[in-house]
Length: 160
Image 1: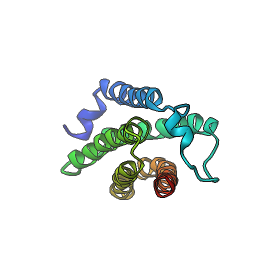
Image 2: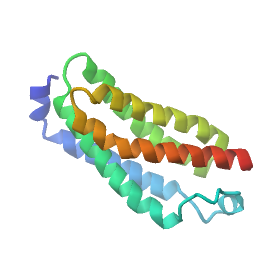
Image 3: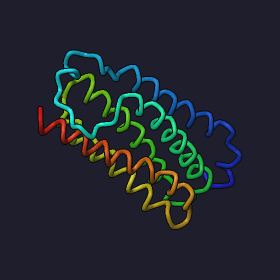
C-alpha cells in the first residue's frame, strides 16, 4: 500500500488507537505493585512514586499513537514494512516487559527484554528522523522514559 492509499484507510487510526489502549489496559491489569513479591523488592531511591507512572504513560502512549499514525500515513516504499514491523515489535515488547517483570517476577529477563524495547525505539527514531521528523520527535520522550526504566530495571535486578 502506498502513502496515498494509506491516507484513504480510515480504519488505520482506529486500529492504532485500539492497539495502544489494549496494551495500556492489559499492562495496567498485569502491573501489581501491591504483591508480596514487589513489596519485598529492594528498589532504588530514584524510583518515582507510583502515582507518576499513569500520567507519564498516558502522554507517552498518546505520542506513540500519533507517531505510528504519521508513519503509517506517510512512509512509503521499501522502508514501510520495516517501520511498520518495528512499531508492531515495539508494541509487543512494551507489553512483554510488564508481563516478564510483574507476572513472571523476573527482573533479569525484563532487563534483557527492555534493551530490545529501547532498541526498537532508537531504530524508529533513526529511520524516521530524516523524512518524518515529527514522528521521530514524538518518540523522543518515550525513548528517554524507557532509557530511565532500563536503569530502574537493571538496578532492581542487581540488588535483588
